[in-house]
Length: 494
Image 1 (cartoon, rainbow, N blue to C red):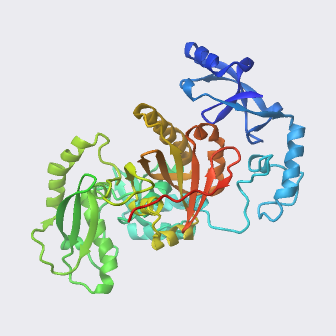
Image 2: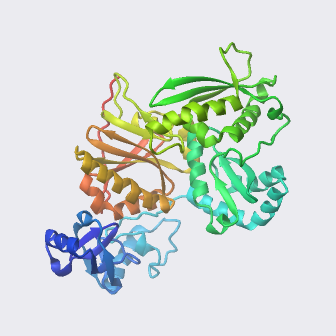
Image 3: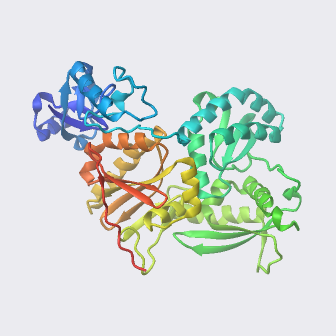
């Protein structure tokens, strides 16, 4: 059957018209009645005749119409073919109940070609499901939490929520509370670690809507809203840290910061004091701004001979008087979360030579782009069953066409995957011939399924999808078959 793909759905081509004629008609009248091939109980390119539906569709980007071929089957025939695949493929899967007559679930997970995206051979922790469970438990205790926070009994609130956080979310998270205009506030901070901040973003993004009516949620420590409160025996607000700063030109002007702590403490107390001082500094400057302006942050507990140290308040004044106007002048997107643009170094190539590369987690980008083995990150991600992954595709070498392609990939395809809780994009790189989109993946099977669903559009760009687990890489050609391929490793200069 002659069909076409448009924004993740398959439609029947009216009267089997040639694509160009159909597009010209759409430009004249963008709203058209079409036959939608639904995937409620089937998977492309095979569809169920009884479940097609006529819909009114506005086609505002006709150039994204892609001709496809679909196979239309009766419900009886589709189920018969699927049942055969279930009997052949599902044995040994922990999710299979040994009932091939019940196809519920199988119809949206197993293709008629025998490809399964949700097979489970062993029980593993699922970060996405852990986040969902955390917010459900949070909702059950939120009334008690709200009461504790309003009475400023923050330590009790932290202890209460920390128990369910540790049970359901294996990621590091610094949990804090505050009040903003009489509304209670819950904060998850990554404590300056870029990977922990990415995961905090993810957790906060999927807070339940019913909670958002009563709470404010932040994945960073907001200044003025969070009021510093000691978590241990030291109140650093009585003897605040000083700051030694150096301006450095990296991707743009940034600060190399050393927080000179004033308390005389034992070495075994450095860890807890780092947290105390970090909380205090963020309460004044704001963690989102701190992460944006710093290229490096260190703590010093020794009497070092720094040329000039200033107070946190003086540093805050300098930031808003000098630094922010300078950055805003250069970057129209303003100051949000930490993002870093790499610049080429002589004698090194990242993924075949690049024009520009942006990341909000340098360690992960080094791992993907430079094939670095980052043992701490590898252990951290493996422990939580989170993958690093890359979508690799050809660019057109035409600025206008490439800009349009990147808009589609970032704002449509990847954004849709993120809205489902499947991925978190943390960077991208444009090389001489390729675009690489780097992501954390929280459900490998569902992510591959959704990428496959969008393969008619992605295959336009000769797209490949690579998953990285520790030092192991698996690459799939993005089409309906999603076959694993052997990719030649990029040559790098030493």
